[in-house]
Image 1 (tube, one colour):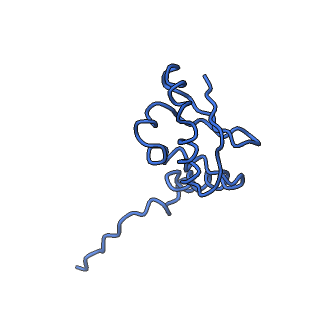
Image 2 (image 1 turned 120 degrees about the vertical axis):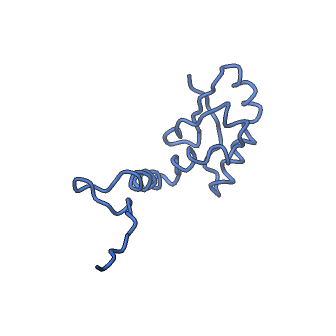
Image 3 (image 1 turned 90 degrees about the vertical axis):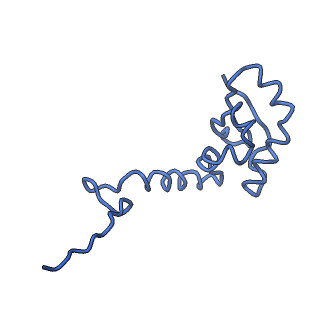
Length: 112
């Protein structure tokens, strides 16, 4: 009797009800949408800790880039943090811009 070869299941190419599985598709779709504006909010969110550092990343969370400006809207985990972080605004903007390779963000704004 001939042995059957076991082939590992490749989920990224598997079809489910005629649609590609979400695991590999969702980030490519989001990146395509982000790339139209030239600024990848998906990249910023997924790499936030490595961009600004773990200490800062635990205090503020990026929300979105303000339309037609270079202002990044952030949410602070505690309102008292806003004053402390505002003193580090230039440093945080520089880290974000270094990551993207151009002046993507020039101002930080906090939302409630």
